[in-house]
Amino acid sequence: MTFNERLPAPRREALRDALPGTVDLLKRRRAGEIAETDIDDYVALNWLEWSGGGLRLTTTGDNVCKQLLGRLG
Image (cartoon, rainbow, N blue to C red; front, side):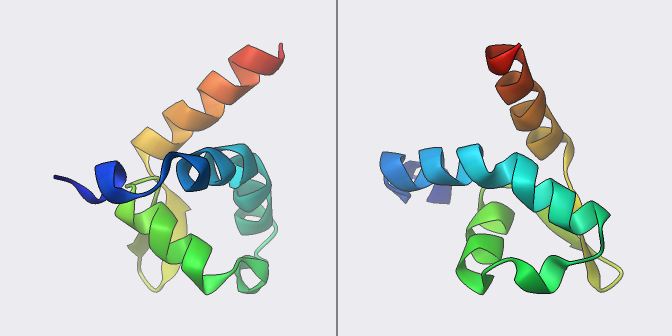
């Protein structure tokens, strides 16, 4: 069983819904405003990754964002 499967569905949905805002904070270099528990969960879901001491969006995370934008559009 992967972490993703153990993470409760409501938590995964909340993280997915908040991901575009999280990405915006990263782009504005305001990662300190992202809750540590959210960062841990995003990394465990492979939506964000640590790179050179900073966080960045993974391909999986980018796809999740694109799916959200497709739903809204």
